[in-house]
Length: 254
Image 1 (cartoon, one colour):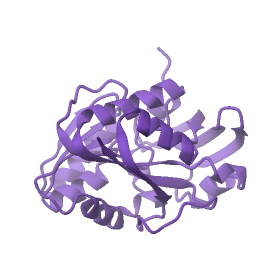
Image 2 (cartoon, helix red, strand yellow; image 1 turned 90 degrees about the vertical axis):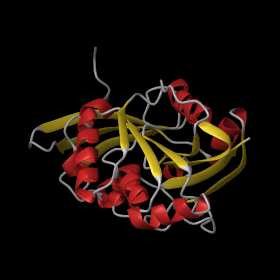
Image 3 (cartoon, one colour; image 1 turned 30 degrees about the vertical axis):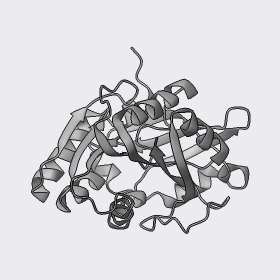
Image 4 (cartoon, helix red, strand yellow; image 1 turned 30 degrees about the horizontal axis):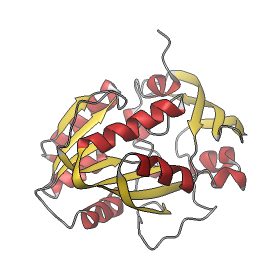
């Protein structure tokens, strides 16, 4: 079976991933997460698409009970090593975000930094991830999601933005933004942690605020807030604009 681009990318990429600029905002982002759950140390937290576990480890260091799931066993192995170094215990599980077994057990679900959503190849698959996040939450629980802002590529080059932000030898090229599907199609050239070259044909779904609001309402969420998403500075006072590459969403399960 042919692997999708995101499966190929994360087969052996944990070290390179942690060099990227967007991974440097962990402390400020966890400050926001803590505030959203009222610093409730008894809260059970699920991180969908946890990668190398940077948010989970910081939350665990602050005393929270965290479960992290990811599709990539390689990324999870790096997460487990990171957690051991940090001296914290976290339940890391290999799982596909489209097919989760959790039901009404969590006070908070995270899907941040394009953790699974919105990388899937169809809108239906992305919706499955939202469904599973909703199913995993208790009534009154919160969902914190960051995703690609569909307003950004209407005014800016995604290719330029991604390449300007890159801190490794990776490069995006040939980006084409499809106005009918709001997908950015590109070629991503990089090397993995062993120095092997990879050329990946990527497709990422961008969403506009009204879409996200409707999708979450259809799944039983209320009090849906959508904000700008600045590195290390998540804040409800940050109004979303066309300058934001990502948007930050906070919603409550009815």
